[in-house]
Amino acid sequence: MNKTLFSIALFAFSLFIITSCGVNSSIMFKEGRDFKGYDSIPMTPQYEYRIAPNDQLSLLVYTNDGERIFDILTGATISDAGSGQNMNRIISRSNTMKYLVRQTGIVEFPVIGEFNIAGLTIAESQKLLRERYGSNYVDPFIILEVVNQRAIVFNGDAGHSTVVDIENYNTTLLEVIARAGGIHQRGKAKKIRVMRQTPKGREVYLIDLSTMDGLYHADMIIQANDIIYVEPVTQYTREVLREVAPVVSLISSAIVVITVLTRFN
Image 1 (cartoon, rainbow, N blue to C red):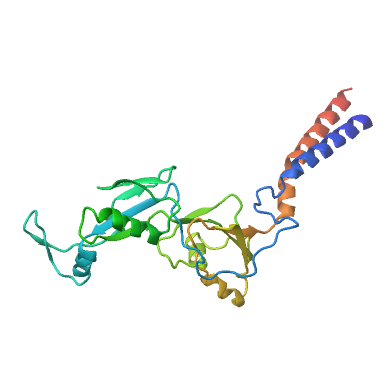
Image 2 (tube, rainbow, N blue to C red):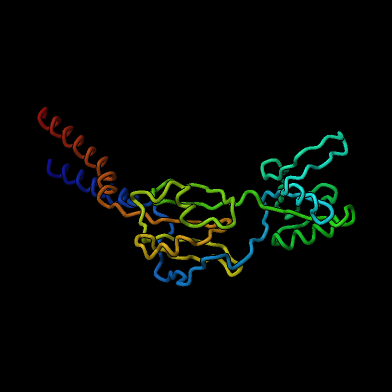
């Protein structure tokens, strides 16, 4: 009997050691010994965004250096040559065509065909497109935008994240966190990491929003493909109890079975 109980206890202890490895295993981006965040937090973008594969672009082309845009913004009516009717034209991102940048960095635009655009900034792309369309149109005015810019937010609730679309170039950290549902009750407001890919590599900025002093950094401008990670509180007691519960249940069942068998013997 004693040997059997000892075997059960040893098995239960071994099982507990194995299952305890899963305690807080969902916590990401743990800091290593050599980890150092950047003390200097850029409040505004230091690098212009460069177009990358899988970006979706919107393109508007106007002739005569955008003279028609001025007419639209001032509310002037424009004669439609095809129908002879007057109509107000409205510029909107939602009603423009979207063009996908392929993995090769090439995108196909109307009239000019394929165009290698990956790695270029918006300004550089508009300049080259103006030259390309200049052979077909008089003084073309180009409006090019990346319409699928987004940031990923982990708000401190393990296993949950949100992809937030960046519709404006001046979207702040606080706005992105708010659109992702705010900081979870398990999240640490004093330990927020903004991870950003730059020409120098991935940079990590440590931000504390737990006090009024952190309000300044709340206005940090978020860029496309930024990762915002709110570190969750480590709940060892709850995690351990959750891992131990099956072991305790197994031990209890084993003891009941042994007790019943012993009585019959």
